[in-house]
Length: 161
Image (cartoon, rainbow, N blue to C red; front, side, top):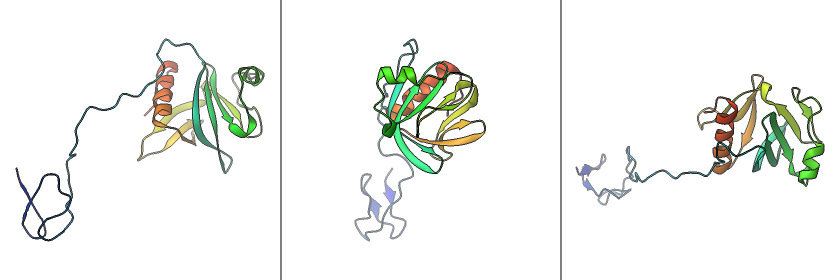
């Protein structure tokens, strides 16, 4: 089916973004490309914890910081790069004395137990956040990071959207 220009009525080429007669921009309501969706890598469901997500950005108070997310079966560690480097030995010392209560690990790093996490959202029209006790904690991850976070949420039983 050939389309016509809404401005001048001239026939439009399927791939053109402008009318060849009047130069008016065209609006495509349907996607031109409909190839297969890319499959993002995520940890296998049977892979043992802990999992680590790099390049995470989150807020501490009113300040944005960046670092790692360290995902365990007990909770989520938000580990700021400025408090690191986060070696396996340092992670052992950062474990929570009471795994059921949130606590500060370092100046800009903290731990949130699973019983405090209500949901994980990463939809463009709602928010990119972890919902902790009814409060949205802004979170920015790479697409691979969100795929890992979705796998983590499915494994521990947290709603994710």
